[in-house]
Image (cartoon, rainbow, N blue to C red; front, side):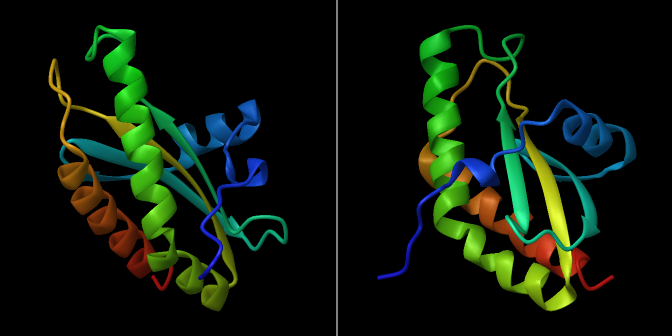
Length: 129
C-alpha cells in the first residue's frame, strides 16, 4: 500500500508564496471548486503545495466550513497521484489554492472528489504546456 499521508511540507503556508500564487497565477474552475495555481521550477522538498479556502461569506457556520475543508483535503490526498508524476516528469513545481464557491450549501464528498479529479487532471495537462 502506498503512502498517502499529507506532510507539513506539502501545505502552502508562506505569505510570499500565497501572494505570488494569487498575483501571478492562473485559474481553473470545476464548480463548486476553483483552483488558483502557479507553476515554478522544481523543488526537492515537495513538488506540489496546496491550501484550501472555504469563505465565511459563502458558508456561514463553522461546522460546515470545517466539514467542507476536511472533504476537500481528503479528495486532494487520495487523488494527488494524478498530478505528481506529471510534475516530476516536467521538472516543475506547483503551488495551488482550492477555493470553495457554492453559497449556503455543503456539497457531498462524491461531488467534491469528482471535481477535484477533474481539476488535478487538467493541472497535470497544464504542466506539459
